Length: 325
Ligand code: PBG
Ligand code: ZN
Image (tube, rainbow, N blue to C red; front, side, top):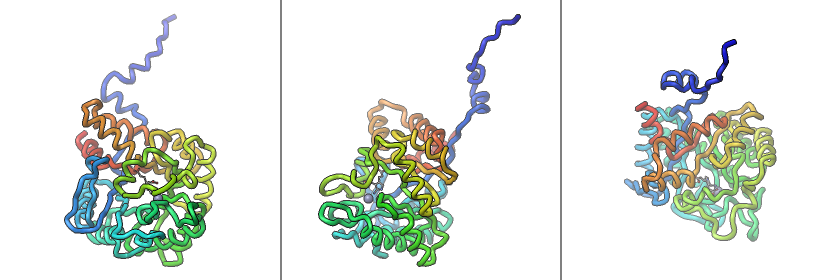
């Protein structure tokens, strides 16, 4: 009788064997690249908490959009800093705001690139909350009417996908109805269905000047301790007509990504957020980690957890690394 030894290492013996048995791969086609557009012309200013990311005026945003497209990245997500803020956040649906102008300029010069519009009010309100206030409480149903206007203005500008990130109840149904009524039945909705009240959004709030002026977002964003509640949010958003379900942030919530992927038949997106990005950039700048290796490993983990779409500030660098392989 020959003694049998079980040796999984045989499947790791060289790169060709490893590549034959590799279970997960990432591609530039998985990525969405977020950009921040600002008023003005010829502006390209690095965001201090997010090295390698820039505040871009519309003309510069168009240049980046072309770069993204040339790299094979299929989509851009547009965030914006407005020219003015008020109590309601009315610059969020102003057709002359940087976001609306950037969406239409990108659509015109790079028509194949998919444009995702982030729909929220916190960048546009003086108080920095994601909806209309009633005292210190964000009024859910009053906010829905404003979100409808934002979504329609972005669709009219040329957005292909509307991505509501406010966490109001019923916003997917409200936005779907408003889009359809305005003739945008082919514009899809990528819902930030599972968005946690996370410390990982810090650098974004600096970049987007969207930190709440009092309190925090825990009365509308989700408690990081909850997973069953995540499934409830997903179920509701699908019933309301969401086309894509997003989980956010990514790395601390990969168990949620897996649970969502195993439960639904819609595409799942994950948002590799600003704090996750900033930590990698800071440690890499110190020489403490190998940036390329860490980024590709992290992006692979998101895919392995079940994400079909990865929204990431690393998209341009990662695309370069994937092309050089
Ligand atoms: C706005 C919004 C936020 C992010 C995306 N849309 C911040 C927040 O909810 O405070 C975070 C993105 C990131 O951190 O990269 N609602
Ligand atoms: Zn918001």
